[in-house]
Image (cartoon, rainbow, N blue to C red; front, side, top):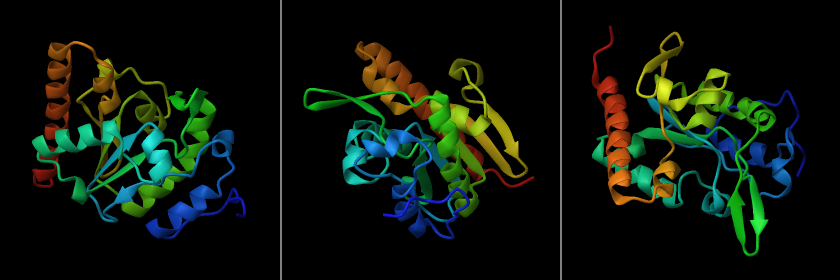
Length: 208
């Protein structure tokens, strides 16, 4: 496969997969099974952006199909945010991991990898043109805002990204999977649903 050139752009969502598979902007392609582009409605009003593909996403080639994705589906349903009418993607398109026996342990993308992959996120934003973007976790928020973000300081706020596009920051669903106590899990899950419900409610408001 020919490497993607630095000035290559895609003209449709269908072009994303082969283009991302050919990307050599950072070293993550070397160990990943494949690139994982975003998926969903081309004219979706809302785009959800996570951190990176996980183990199952890397193997299947689709975003949010693993445990965190199933939790996201459940929360979106409870929040009345129709996933079929959204676009879901990640800030980084290749799985970064550390082998440990037969397992592949997730590693957080670094600043250079986030910046390199911003190219693809920008193209997805241009193609879909959502009015609302939901950042799931600190990596997504950093990619979208161009700076390190503390989730607790901006969570649940609507932030202007540009004219006619706003950002809502919340947690990544994988955070919920790491919590041990059932009471903590339920409390944080409920807060997550509330954040998504705020987004759903904002979409239903008439334009000013």
